[in-house]
Length: 475
Figure (cartoon, rainbow, N blue to C red):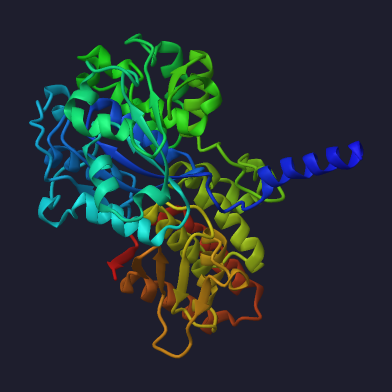
């Protein structure tokens, strides 16, 4: 009997590690007031493939709601996460001080952002909770106004929100800035039905010290570069608060609660960091995207150029540096599946990665309808889309249309949002013309044909930026 229990325990552990490889552990909605610690907190959340940010709402606090909206949208756009919706709290009575350091901090490119089109935060929360059935965590990086209003006005809020994580100075504290943004809402939420976990800082000691920054600066991800870029900026260095860990402790607690000690007070829990050096490791792990195992059979694909054939090994480092490890690994796997290096297969890889980037999703999380048909070479794009997104016919997530005008175009649907990605016509025509010319001169049965196709594929893989070659339409 004991042997059976040990076996079951072992199976459960394995299921915990390997079951539902596509499903993140944490679904969150984030409410922010635009403080300078929030750029770090939100970036940490976005960096972890084990966290899915469903939406971000902005409320007055360190900045006005309008200014906080501009910061958040510019941050998401800088990561090409344009598909993460941002709602705004226009009804809050708190008069923000618009702290100068927070106002001057650049989260991304701020021009051409339309405040008028920003949805109301409560309507957005209602929309998200009506389509996402997984229970979520609601993260408050400022005051509690939006959380309280949503708890009263959104029918699904109390059923769908399993916990509220709040960055504050303690459950019983009444002097902290975040509490005093809206005392009434904070008090009511703390005495409400949804468990609140208050994430406290220890003090204002330096968290991002020289040792941490030395490790941070070599992380070759857009998220690591964003935080290291902020911390090295003149505006950050003008205020020691930039190098403290405040609101980002909420992000770290969500992913690594074992690095905190807790104290239960009533229905709520107070959480305090217990090991600063461990939190360093936790933050670096998130920024590297190493919070989940991304593959199912192999731990990692080699990045050493010598592992690859001579004609491609000279481009390995350049492709990874320019487009990231996800595009590289998806490209390798797609071409192995495809059994030759094909231009349209690489187009499909770049398209799939761009769609995932837009929504900030992992694999197997949206449906895709391809208009590339089933006739090569255009249909080769479908193989790249499958590998890079996990949307396969076997999962029931990929449909290939043959009953309409064929094009290098795919429609992606995630939750209640839908976009169409289309390869720019001039690029599609250039690639098709090249393939036709090579075929006309050498024929499909010629080794020279496939050698030239391979050569062109490597060139396009290296030179085509997925952020520049597609037209994205919001459907």
